[in-house]
Length: 121
Image (cartoon, rainbow, N blue to C red; front, side, top):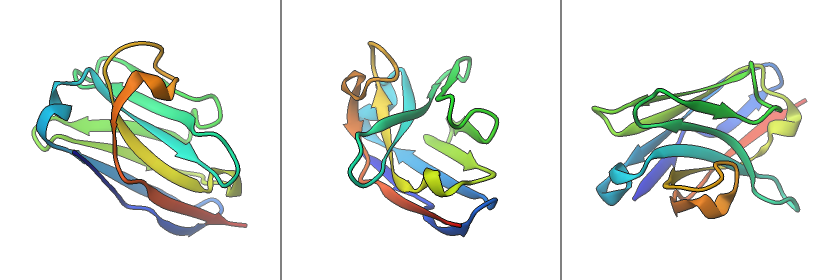
């Protein structure tokens, strides 16, 4: 299971940190990623980190602003979001990555329930 938390309402330029606690068989996955989905839009890739922490991947739209990290002891992945923009408004989902193209949702097996992030202008 995956439990995402940390969303909320923030002004443009502000910061939020999302957390995703993993349990059960999700820990056997290769990595953990974050996706987001805005109203009327498709779910889009945000970032991925391998459990080893060796590799990270970011969407161009968040590079330099978002940072993904993991705490293996806590089985938790974090998404630090800085310099937030109104276009970052979406429901953010964490998901366990197993194999395949990392930016495609179909490469992820288990999904958290999502947490709403709203950035006001």
